[in-house]
Image (tube, rainbow, N blue to C red; front, side, top):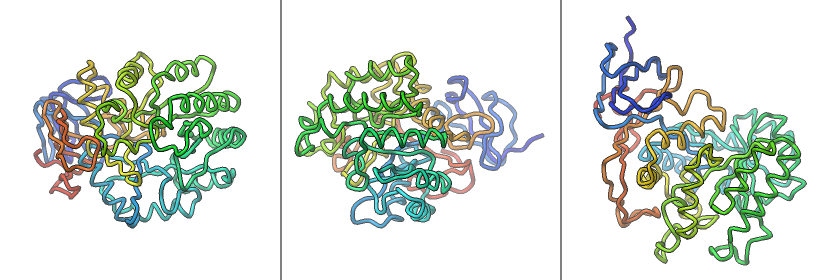
Length: 415
């Protein structure tokens, strides 16, 4: 009889075939079996979560890490700690803003070394600039870049200049040859005001024009493209229309765009630093409709964590998203799909994003009924708000971690 390293039971396991009572057997850091809640599964350690849900760990895509005035290693340590608190078990770091920007293999290796001690695994996006050539892309991929990112305006400023149409098409063609995906900050620089720091200077038409450029380029070269972040709900129909004309295009939005209408922001809210900006309540409601639509092209939801701009959202992202989603009839399966399964599929991370045999034992105990008061002094845009849903415990490769990211005894101590 198999003896597992650990077994985690819950009456609400969000597994590949839905939400149901189950037991998850873990051995050597991977899920070896998913069986009935009361199944006889001998293990060295057993955790019973009861009604607390068990989710696959979130894969947070395009996470900003490097903060001004901090060393790289300290930045990744802080991001890893915030990730654990927020139920994120894999961070996919943005190439910029960062020092050095991840636009060549040497820079990527510098970041990899700095991130090695992080309490959560860190993967990396490679940056695409006007000077990036095919050898640069191939070297970045060979060094470990899981995908690539570019901007049509200031989405990578000051480290990654915006791409023109010719360079965008060329980069897409080169990445298609590498069978990789390109994430695009799609605000068009020509549609931004001066200076482009307020919502009035970053209108929705900047996203529309940028999205039109992305679709036109991708249609020519057949590249896989992911708009990140997507905020202007009026562009949802344009995004959805890409598929029927043969363009493999999807998008990511962030909880602050889904939860925080611009009308409710305090004058000193960190959310004013968002690029694109937090938009109106009418836009927020329409963005939810687009996200919840059947076969939506908005497939992933990421934290939008960006310390370089004063946006510290990683710790509260999962709770904020759940707070708004369950009010609209969204379920735990939706939460897991947006934050774990779809991001892992987008980047080809075959062992992550699902609770199923053969996948990494990256697990999150999440209480969907718990109320969480965000401290008023918290640096996040959610300061002073009450959220619903609390991360109770995290396992990375089957090993349990405490709230500060420290290892707690064996792989599955009690919650």
